[in-house]
Structures are given as structure tokens and as C-alpha cells.
Length: 115
Image 1 (cartoon, one colour):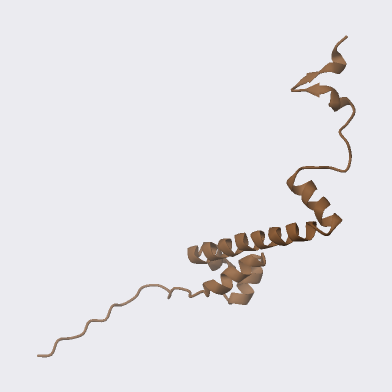
Image 2 (cartoon, rainbow, N blue to C red; image 1 turned 45 degrees about the vertical axis):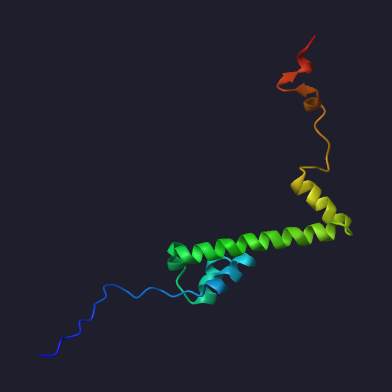
């Protein structure tokens, strides 16, 4: 008697296949979840819980940040507005000076109260 070949019955929906290279590229340009959903033609709730998508998207997003930062530093060498932007955002510099009353405070001690 010939042996019967057993086939496994799968339970539930088939796993959603997502192109992780596209997911990484979407992260690179900081696409929203709705935009990713439209491009990949996958429900956004599925994307929000899909671990492989999340990893690829976050990796792409970090690469995009590094690329943008590198470009900003390059432009800061020749562009005053770009240099000012980096100084304000990375170094915490500001256009307006400190409040005159606060300039007397040293580590919580207010000299204006001293008589």
C-alpha cells in the first residue's frame, strides 16, 4: 500500500509579505504611516504591528537623519543661514539675550533679594 503524503493545514491568514527595502526607503524620507500604507498597499494597523517593517523603517529613518545632518554641515560652511540654524539647534544659541533679572541668578541664588 502506498504511503499517504500528509499535508499540513495552516490556520489563520497568510503572513503579509512586505518589501523591506521599500520600507527602509520610506523611513529614509520620513514618510508617515498612512503614506507607507498607501505605497506598500498594506493596512496601516498591520504595519504598526509588523516587527520586520518597524525595524526596516527605523533603520531607514536613522540613515535619513544622518544624511540630512551631513548635508546641513556641508551647507553651513558656505551658507550663513544654515550655520545659524545649526548653532541654534545643536548649540542652543538664541537671538534674544537672557532676561536682565535672571542674569543675576547663580545656581538658584537670586542676588536681587540681597540688601
